[in-house]
Image 1 (cartoon, rainbow over the protein chains, first blue to last red):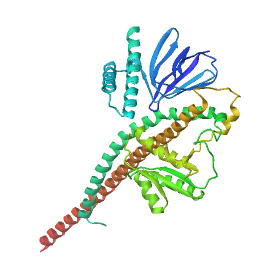
Image 2: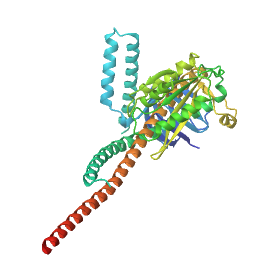
Image 3: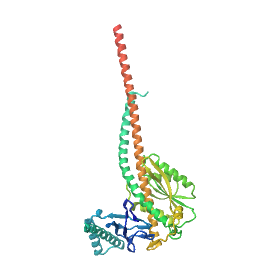
Amino acid sequence: MPLHLEVITPERRVYEDDVDMVVAPGSEGYLGILPHHAPLLTALGPGEFRVKKGGAEEVLAVFGGFMDVRGDRVVVLTDVAEHAEEIDAQQAREAREKAQRAIEAGALSAADELRARAALEHALVRLRVSERRRRRR
Amino acid sequence: MPSERELRRRLRSIRNIRQVTKAMQTVAASRMRRAQSSVLASRPYEDRLRSVLNDLGPYAEPEAHPLLVRRPVQRVAILLVTSDRGLVGAMNTNLMRAAFRFAREKPDVGYVAVGRKGIAAVRRLRAPLIAEFTGLGDRPSSTETNVIARVAQEEYVSGRVDEVHLAFTRFVNTLRQVPTLRRILPFVPEEEDIDALPPLEYIFEPDPATVLGSVLPRLIEVSVYQAILESIASEQSARMVAMRNATDNATDLIEELTLASNKARQGRITKEMLEIATGAEAMAKG
C-alpha cells in the first residue's frame, strides 16, 4: 500500500502521486514517513523534502508550513515548495553571499539579522537541493 | 419618426460606445483568464488546511487558543469584499444585499470593507467601519491580504467583536458568481467530521499548542486571501460578461438604426423623384 502524497502551496499543487516513502524536514529534525505511519501533524522547517518512489528519489525544497499524516495520506501545506529543476543555483549562490556579507558586517538590528539568517538558510536549502540533482545526473 | 440626420447622429455615437465596450471586454477577458486560473490553483490549499484543522477537532478545545474562544455574541464583524470599480453587473449589489440582510439578524455589526464599492455602501448605511482597504489590484500578494486578516484577528482576540464573518462573491464559472457568507472566527470544527473521526491518537511535533498556534492564524490568512481571489475572479468575469452584453446590444441597435436611416433616406429620395416627376408633367402640360 503506497503513501498518497500531496504538496500544496497557496499558488499551486506542486506534487501529487503515490510514493513509497517521504523524508521531511520537521521542526524538530528530519523524519521519515512510511505507509501505516501513526497520525502525525508537524510543523516544517526550511529544508529538503525527499520523496522515494520505486528506487528513484526526488527532492523538493520546502520552506515552512505543516505536514499532516493520516492513514496512508500525507498532505504537505507549505508557503513555498520548489522542484530541484526550478531552482536557479546562481541566484541562490548570490543570495547566500549577500546574506553572509550582511551577517559578517554586523551592525544589523535584531530584526534585520533574523531576516538575513533566514535568507541564508533558504539559500543554503536551495543550493543543497539543486546540488543533489546535479550529482544524480 | 426621427429625422435622417438625427438617426445618423445616434448611429455614430452608438458605434463609438460599441468601440469602448468592446475594448473593455477584451481587457476584462484577459484579466479574467488570469484571475480564474489563480483562484482555481489556490483552492486546494485552503480546502486541505481546513480539513487538517477539522482532523484536529477533538484537540481544538475552545480554551486551547485565543482564536477558538467562544463568547456570547454581542458584536459581529463582517469582512466585506467588493470590487474597487463598477461595470460589473449586479455582482456588488447582490453581495451587499446578502450581507446587509445577514447583518440585520445580528445584534451589533461593524464592517471591515475591502473595495471602494463596499466602503461607499457601508458609509451610506452609516454603519460602523472598523477598517477599509482599497487598491489591491488584480494580483494581490498574500503579504497585502495578511494585513487585512490581521485586523480581523485583532478585533476578535481583543474582544471587540465576538464573531467574524467573511462576505465575498464566490467564483463558480464565467456566468455564475455566488454571494457567500462564511464565519471565520471563532474556528469551530465541522461536526460531521468529528463524528466520522475514529479515536485517533495524533502525534504533534513539537506539541499540540504550538501546532494549533501556527495552523489557526494561517487558516484565517488563507481564508481571507482566498476570498479576495474569488472576488477578483468574479469581478473580472462579471465585467467581461457585462461588457459583452453591452457590445451585443450596441450591435443590435446599430442594425436597427442603420435600417431606419436607410428607410428614411429611401423615403426622401422617393419623395424627391415624385416631386421632379410631378414638376416635369406640369411643365409638359403647360
